[in-house]
Length: 73
Ligand code: SF4
Ligand code: SF4
Image (tube, helix red, strand yellow):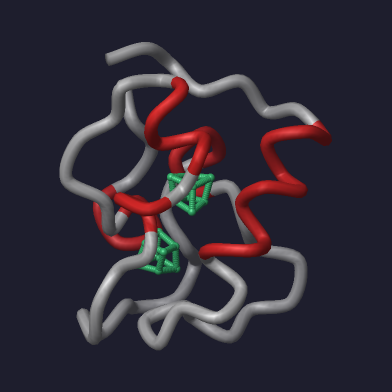
């Protein structure tokens, strides 16, 4: 597992997965939680799209729910 880079490329991938996620906290401007850390809002677990994400695969991430649990390390 590697630390995720906060890049425009990763952000663009992220919005395709976190964007439509039913658990996503509705805070404007928040995304790329695996790199930037958890949401400022409390997260209710209703499913997580992270395991299908290309960033997840590229960095060998595990678990998901980065919006709740914080950045991958
Ligand atoms: S980190 Fe996972 S649970 Fe949170 S919004 Fe993104 S896909 Fe959904
Ligand atoms: S692993 Fe999750 S938080 Fe990270 S870029 Fe993909 S969808 Fe976004």
